[in-house]
Image (cartoon, rainbow, N blue to C red):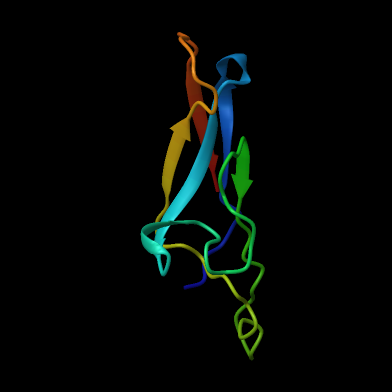
Length: 96
């Protein structure tokens, strides 16, 4: 499936820089595989920002060598990598 734009996820707020997130999608790596799993790309964990660009244009065989197409949907898991008590808050910013 071909989409347009460049979806981006970042923290609008990340109290104390305590939070990270991972991007997940349904795929060949299990019911909810980590985005990038099985595509040869780096793992999408421990992130503070993420973006996806599909620069494939319609026509001809331009898209035939593309290894990763637009995900139909994604799941975002936000977590604290360090254990501890905190009242810090986070807010995600999602754009396209």
